[in-house]
Structure formats: structure tokens, C-alpha cells
Length: 317
Length: 317
Image (cartoon, rainbow over all chains, first blue to last red; front, side, top):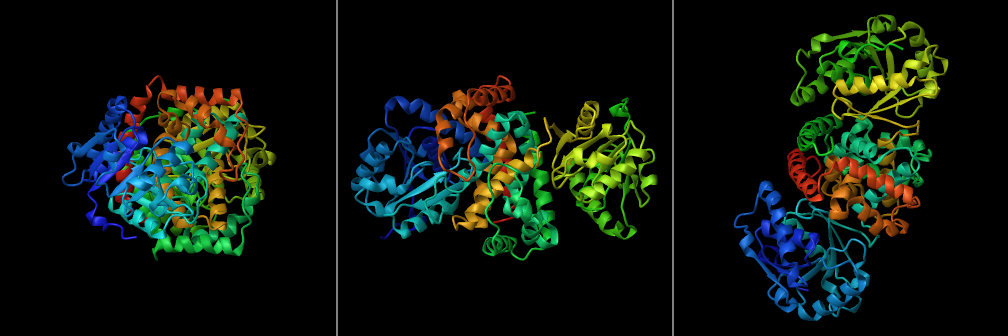
């Protein structure tokens, strides 16, 4: 399929009047696109606009692209009119499989075949969603993180009938549009970020259920401990840097046996040579030759600023 | 026991020459205390000083307490001299139970009974550590998060023979010394923060083992998705705010069934009425009457600054 050149994309259509649809609309407007937003019911217009205008406050303080303006937003309740001229479609309809399937059936016939249609779904797979779509090759999942106008992550994955070209195109387009895309290897439930967050969340619920911690203790511990570091380095690199000279290899070789401890309710995988090598090689690639002392200095400089930002926001003290 | 008034504490002894002992020494110096640091071997002095001086760069940019100075650090290799005059002892000896037990046996006799001795241990319990100590009432765990001179979290818990007064004193002292203490209800392995981090970590290892994600994908997803939000709000409040009007109650009532999905390898607890109420009540307490729209606005303002700090640090791009 001959998808449009990324730099030629000017017109984006966003489907959905909720916080995700509204958040996407605001994001694309802030990046300088013309945005047509489809809302199902004219009665949703006021709440939709409130979402966009609330997002705009933050987007302005993050910095707008040249020419970006709320004036470049058009709101319509006619789907055919919404998709007309669109070079990319971000779909954020309700998370109900029947609704999504019916929508993709319509869109599949209505939208030119060289336009990528990307779904914000967090819980459904594109293989299911695209089932009744006549042109499923260009349909992908592009799952944002809430709030979608601020958090850069977009997890991208195709369904069984998706062309790999459409996935690559979506990745390049999201990157050009100021997002941090991650292309998944396979359609796993929860994708990557939600799975990780969900593991932590389940452990948190266990602790509260057992009277081992309160929600306040959990949030205080996260805010003042692992989370600021994770915001800068993720988790693999946080350990890589913390372990000094030996990095991730030391972490796994030294603390590997601790994986067998009954910490948390999540059983650990077998620490095979293959797993060890994948972890070590991945961290080495991210370190790009930087010595741990340089990485630790970069971490500390970053932590100072992140902690100042968290302290200034002071939401939960 | 008559512990010293918190505001009278001027002299702190830090035991341990590694990154944790050095990090604690730097922290207390930066908060304006006189610090005597015990190192086991004079040969460790240079590396110990390097840790303190590296930490000092970040501590200066976070802001020092009036009168804080590296000149107020004394390094000794004699334990008796180290603890003399100390009004609080932070112990960061190697994580070997026999070493810790022998040390607490010595300290128990050597240190006046009204001086709280706090262990940085991450993997041992105070019940084990204090076994051969003749004065175990004032011994507690005060577990920091790495790097201890920057991350504010200290998890506090006593052993079976610890006085509850010592735990309360330690909490008040750490707070006065610029830390964010969390007192645990019980001696659970991994305390709170490490357990949560470990659940996420095990899920990450499973994903890498199964070829579902690479370390790079995991770290990119965390940095651009859940982590900046978690740094500001923790996880309970991140969900509370994301769910709009209904907050945590909506989260649990609406997504509760999803806990049964085979997302992650960690089985979820039964979502009992008691667990639901604990979660909802905890979030309500943290919200302190703020409407979700106010909390969401505070989150967004904070996220803008955290994201700017993360982007400026730009460690993994």
C-alpha cells in the first residue's frame, strides 16, 4: 500500500467524544495539524470542548508547534464528513467490541485504502476489531496512556490481517507527531505498560487486602521511592545503573536467587542464560557505551529536577 | 525510654563505607548535622569520600540546610569512637545476618540506651538482627531507597523486641531530617516499595523471557507512560484521578472484573467489600475533599514539569 509521506500529513480525524478522543484531538491540534473530530451526539459537544480546552492549558505550557491553534478544530456528527480528506484516523470509540466492529466495517468501505486507521483500544485486539472490515490491512492499535495529550507513550500493534507496512507507517507518523511509539512483537493483553502497571497494582491490592499497607502508604512509598527513578530510567536501566560496574549482569547474577523468594505474589520466571543475556544486552544497548558512573551522574542530575517538580506539584502531602 | 528531643539531635553516626552508608552520611551532612562515619577499613576511605562528594553535587542543587558543610564529617575506623556522643545511629553494614547480629551485639552494650539504632537493611528483619542485642528496644529498620541522598523514602519497622516508642521516634526524626518516612504495620519481606517494584520487575522478566518485549521496550513504555504519573500521584491516586467523578470506587466497580483476566502473571486478590472500602476510603483521605477536576488539573500541571525534567535529562533516547 502507498501510504502518504509522513511530512505530507496535515489532516487528522479523531473519532470519539470522551477523554481519550478529546485528548487526542487536543494533542494533534497542538502539533499543528488540522483536526476534524467526530462526536456521536451533538449533545456531547460542550463536554468534548471542555476536555480539549483543559488539555490546551497543559499543551501550551509544554510548547505548541508553529501554527498550532484551536481554530483548526472542526467538530462534526456525520461520520462521512468527519473522515473526508483525513490522512490519518485515530479512533477512540467506546470499548465495546460490537461497536468497534460495526465502526470498522463502515470505515473500511468509507475511507480510502491508503489511510491508516488506529484504535485507542486498551482491552480489545485488532484481530477482533478488524473482523468485519473489508480493508483491514491498514488498521492498527495505537494505544495511548492517560492523559493522552501529555504522556507520550503509544503502543502499536497490528491484528492478524494488518499489513506490516501499516504498523511501520503508524510508528513513523506518531513519532513525527511528537509521540513515543513502541511497536509490540505480538498482540498480548494489556500490551506492555498496562501489564507492568497491573502487576504492581495487583500486588498493591494484595497488600491492602492483607492489612500490610494502606493506599496512603503505597502511594507515599511509590512517590518517594521507585517512581521518580522509573520516570527517568525505566526499571531495567534503574537496576543497571544502581549495580555499578557490573550493571544488569551483577543484578541478575547476585540477586537472581532472590527471585525465588516469596516476595510479591508474582512467581518469577526461571532465570535462564537466554533471559540473562537478553536483559544484559538490552541494558548495554541503552547504555550506549556510557560508564555506569556517567549514567549515575545523569540519573542524579535528572532526579534532582524530577524531585523538584514533584515537590512543587505537592499533590498528596 | 526517654529518647532525646528531635530538635536537640545534632550528632549522627553512620556505619558503613558503601554507597548506602556514604549516601546516608552525605544526606545528614546536607541537613546540617555533625556526622561521624564509621568505615571498617582505612583503605575504604578514598572510595567512601568519592561517594559523599558525588552525592554532595546533587545535594547542593537540591538546597543545603543552614550551616551544612562537608567539614562537619569525621571518618573513623574505631567503632567505639564512632558512636561516642551519637544521638542517632544509621547502620548500613553488609547484608549478612551474622555480621549484623555481631554488630548489634556490640552496639547494644556500647551505645547509651536512649539512642535509636536504625538499620538500612533491605532483605533482613530486625527480629533476626536484634537477636543477640542486649538492648533491642531501640533498634529499628530504617530502609532507604537508592540513591539514599536523593530519594526521600525511608521504610520503618521494628522487630519483635523493638519498643513502639523507638519506631515513633525514628519516624519523627527522619521527617525532621528531610525524609519521607513510612511506618510499616508488620515485618513483611521487601517492605512496601520493593515488593511493588519486584512485582513489576518479575512481570518484566516474564515478558523478556517469552519474547513479548525487550528491555528497551519495557523502559520506553514505563518512562513515557505510567512512571511520570506514578512519580506524582502514586498508583492508587493515579487511578482515582483518572476515573473522574467516581474515582477509585468507579475504578474498582468498573474494572474489578478485569482483575480476573490473565493479564500479568500475578493473580489478583478477591475484590471483597472490605478491600473495596479500604481502597476507596484511602483515596478519599488523600483527596482531602478535592474534586477530581481539581486533582486532574494539579496532576496535569505537575506532569508538565516532570515531563520537562525527564526530557531535559534525556538519558535513554
